[in-house]
Image (cartoon, rainbow, N blue to C red; front, side, top):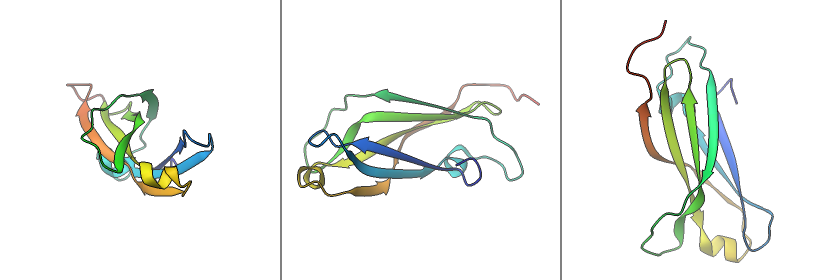
Amino acid sequence: DFITGELTCSVLNPRTGAMGGAFRANVVADLGVEQGKAPQYLMVTGAANFRTMGGNILPAESVVYVADANTGRYVGYWLPWNRQAAQYNFAQASPMQVLGTGSARNIQVE
């Protein structure tokens, strides 16, 4: 949502093939967009194979990257997938987790 900066992603449940979760983040906050500025967002998704130690909450095999083309700042997110909830076909909803942030530009563009 370009107005609020809220990013919502859904993940397919591998058991059912249906949307199994809604994960949210606020990219305005995570990118440090200054109030009154008009960011130019670029979003890319990708597959990921995380090493885990087990447990019910695992990273989904997806990563979401969002960048602001005006500032060059970017943030990567992973989505906390609850295997137990997926097994019983329960809908999931939780915040996305920041994987990392950075800047692809080392000079300020006016």
